Image 1 (tube, one colour):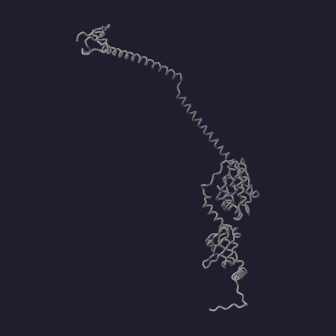
Image 2 (image 1 turned 60 degrees about the horizontal axis):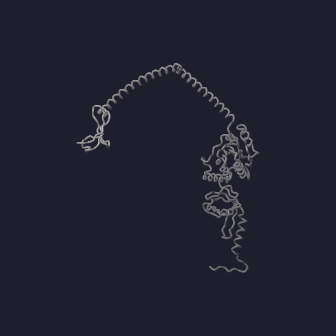
Image 3 (image 1 turned 120 degrees about the vertical axis):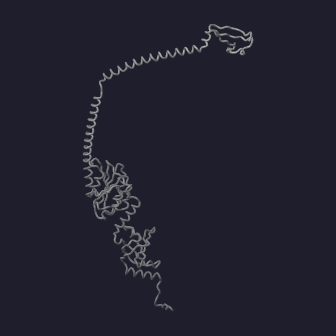
Length: 401
């Protein structure tokens, strides 16, 4: 096919000029559009801008939401989320692509704040901040209590009234904050840090009255949840009415349905303590009476069994006399028996004694070296001998064998 030649009356457009004309038409006709679609291929580089595709079952379009617009979102966009967008259609000159420039976004079917809340709950739960094992016990007798609340609200007056009535010995330190609106979250974090810096503070109550989800939103902020989790002292959350459950309630060590209930939770009731002490005193007195009665009965029983000491002493003296007589009799009998055995032994020794043999006319012959001569072969002619008699000794010499 032969293309027509350009004539001098018609100047061809450059690509840039054509792109600008298309962009001008789009800006004029599609300056503001509302679109429903599903997010896919979401990415967020270091610049903070959001790049994604918006699609339905039949088509898709590239979209971008610059950081200045997405930083005010209350939720975190993610793939698969169906949203309603407001923006304009424009042309990205560099590639000639049509692109949807988004300046507002809201989840479809679920409010952005509610979605952000659910996303934050899943995140903190995965980190273990809601785990029961990290919850701490409250002090039984607190001396110093910290309050993080608004000075202008009814909640602080209700809490102070309950604390004074139940446990007036406790000292209360109030760290006032805004409990709703812009800037409330950072103030709550600062107040918690200030109270935790006071080492005397033993427990902290973070509370306010009820309200809408928007009014309570400061207690759903991630930074407030992490400040509560990082608290040195146990934290009691008392935000809103019982039906309102915030992230602060889930992270705190204890949750009370109302500020008044929180004040009742952290301190004992002095009247109840008085009644309990009185009951314990009565129980102790009754126990003491029972013990005294039991001891008295034991004393009476022991007294009945106890004999006259003089009678016991007389019995023991008689027993000593009997034992003394038995000892003397036994000693005499054993001495006689010992003497008899000694006499018999002496008789046997005398019978075996060589002196007794000598008395019968015998003698003991010994050589000069002292050895006893038993045989003639034990001496030689001329050997000197000594003869031991019953009375005296004789010297002799061998002249014949």
